[in-house]
Image (cartoon, rainbow, N blue to C red; front, side):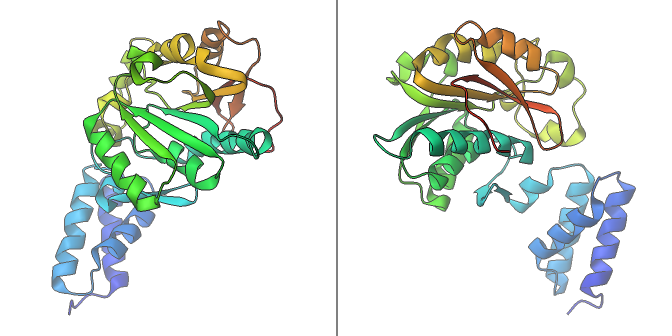
Length: 280
């Protein structure tokens, strides 16, 4: 047994993380302590090894190898964007749309573009039974993680297609959709040069949206938005400064566009298509 109590280890881990400038040091130290199982000398060594890695601003989620999103748990590791709470707005919107317009009749056709860990599409599929979800993802690493998350969460109506969004829906044999959801890369070139330390570990492929950050939105609007059924909706996550620019891009195929704020009051999702009242 270690001579130090778990409380002592937690305090020491917190101190080291605070010294390294880690936000929420106390929370991170506790999560790592629980994960390491530091009840013996081996566990204590494991714990402080994790603390040292976190002190280098290596993401907590990658160290824990999993992270909760909405009401599910997802595997995460290098090669995939870490699920973030602000993205839950995209899921809320999708589920409210589906519950209002697709509770009965044929299954709703849902597209999860730039799927990443699969957290958006899998959460939709697990929380709404009358739908078929198709995820599109380019990265081989991310596709491997999506497959593990499909198994982890027991998906039944979820299909993963690996390929390039910019090849258009015809490359995937997709012809129609009722709901398109996407959290695409949207950082500008300037933003990529001044990333938080933690973001340096996340895949550039999932972050960089072209020189002006808008490359993926142009593709989704021009190539994928045309798939929407008459009462269909397309919703995309945006950076907090991109509401006007992304709305302008989507006016090419829709005259009904809204910018929704996240739970921190920041512009977060652009919705185009059918009008309906959200209760969030």
